[in-house]
Length: 269
Image (cartoon, rainbow, N blue to C red; front, side, top):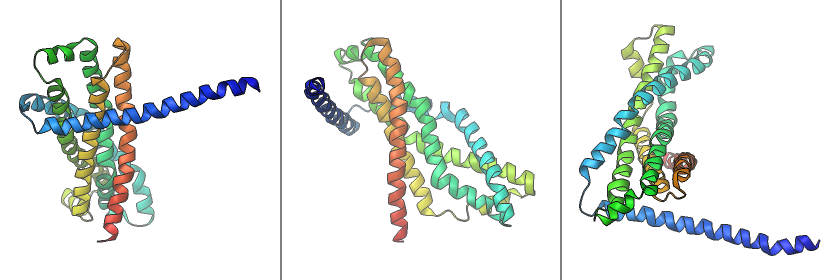
């Protein structure tokens, strides 16, 4: 009993310390994000570095996005087609695939892929630069490391994730067409007509908006974790891991919030 009484102040201290650390982290992250918007509209513009990062984020992700998109379209159609055939609604397969892909799968799956590939890369790359004092050397050399390293990368993910989302959606449709054509001998023009039949402007706009938000989030998280890496090479690995874990968690939270908001918007239209 006495031991419990003695440990109570220590537990209160640990809880208080944890709460203080949580709010301090939120404050630190908020300043990091606000600095991005401040540096974004100030000179000089790191145009060449931004283009290079767009190439790394976008072009180098195409093979993985292509394979994943095709497989997703094929597997989704394989799983869903028997149910549609049972109800005599196999003609609705293209429209069903389109709604599922554009409204749900394309932005989220593309962002999760980029989070694992690009977010971890940002965390590891910037973390290695931090622990080897390269970022400090840039500051001494009168180079703004935040603008050169962070702004260019976050802009790249913000703009390239929507482009990759569109590409992923098209590849999903192509994979679905291969499966439908093999099973029902459906022509390509007929499939395309059905694919875009039930998609409206809100579907396209919401998919692009979500991809923009997700791209900004995963780029910002990856850069933040790498930019403030500590504890040497061990910290580099930890930064890469946390970049993926935190990004994925935030992506799902944003998915719920944005989709809920879009559903409310649809109810008024």
